[in-house]
Image (cartoon, rainbow, N blue to C red; front, side, top):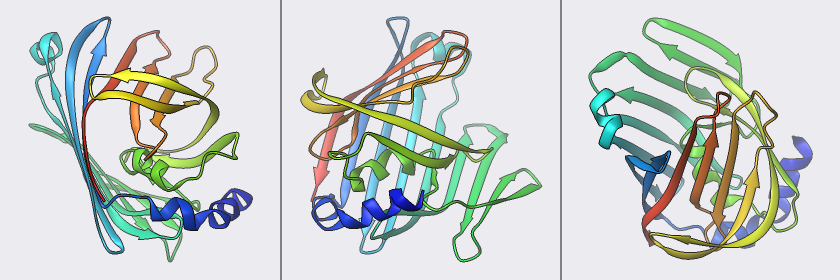
Length: 230
């Protein structure tokens, strides 16, 4: 991990300068060929602070069985290595028992996971992201000369280590237009979740994601709208 962080620092100047201050992204979510959800995200940076919000609205058959919206928020600092989360929340509409929180104490290198009245403290590895900030941290990472990415991430319930192999550039058609993209693959083994991500090459924002769960269920998230403000 220390070598990886040093690599970020070496290429920091050209990568960081191109990062936008505001991003509005909309994604359509599909399963078995049917649209089941709409995801709307907003990223905003004000000097050395950032805020991120995400709202997932169920559609179609999913809305009939699970009509609750899912709300994610992430906030924290922006430093020379990118996003440094301080607080993450996950809420499901009308279900307070599903609420999850994560508090990042970087000075003490401790992560606190909060569910209802239960608080769990864990060691906080360098470069840890939350479920939402991880997708926007890609904007700060120079990928051209790397073959893999490794980082820790929390969803508010647990902390896991993630490994992504960096693949070839590809042309990708989306409802938001055609993008040059770079392919990331977590190389999930049989019986594990498998995640594939296509990042648009210019800003390194996700323009497509495919998640294949251990039971074979597959979900595709594809970019349908994008507004970027420098």
